[in-house]
Image 1 (cartoon, rainbow, N blue to C red):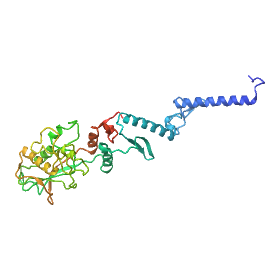
Image 2: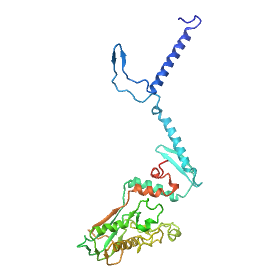
Image 3: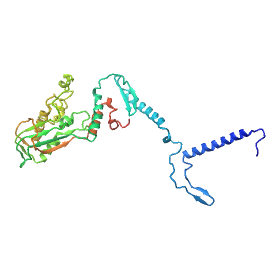
Image 4: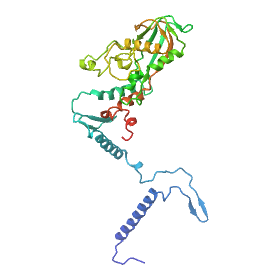
Length: 333
């Protein structure tokens, strides 16, 4: 039916364009929902021809086609919201900053000049992962001038420290917060390994070797009360029970408090006690000494991997929930 005479040609053209746009919109919408495929077979007469060329599988109206600029903005907004939740219950003296390779993403109180305190563990953990790797383990070994002859070590046994910060006896471990779920290295297990190697008598004693690190036992700026109150132990490459006393004669004694002492001396004396408890005749006293040249390694134990060490330590402190191991501690964030 022809349009009335008063309808102009330009109006008819506009109407045609509008109809065409409507068809395109409907087609795009159907394509986005998968109702219209790309490259489907088209019927021609009684035959069907199939376009077998590769065709896109992502609908035209898909989040995957959103420009990167928009996607980044949404991601940053979500990150800001998540970070806000993490710091919402924190003390006023709290700061947090998140950045990526393009610069700052979000920050809260970042202009405050604060002492890191325990949160310094976050930076230390990140550096340890970067330098050592998440699978790194510390090794503590027992050496002698030579292998035992008929179960006898003619000289000293040397307990060689590798820097393991988790070396403990069972009594000390039982007194730790979250005991049983924390990563530790068992000094008893190392004593068992020495016995399994065939050692029955040590003509000398047990000496400790902590030459891997320097002889600094405390941070110069620490308050004396830290050591007096056993807030921290003494530092060293060979230390058991954090370099604290009270477990030399009773390694199974419950508790996690003691006085700071020479960590290598304490470790050697405690290890001698464990060997005697297992029937090994250790005839001389202990102390600190070198590893003999050409020494034989009689036994060794490895610490848990660094990833488990960091996760266990960070999970004890709610203020460190944004640590590198947060996903292992708090899966919900």
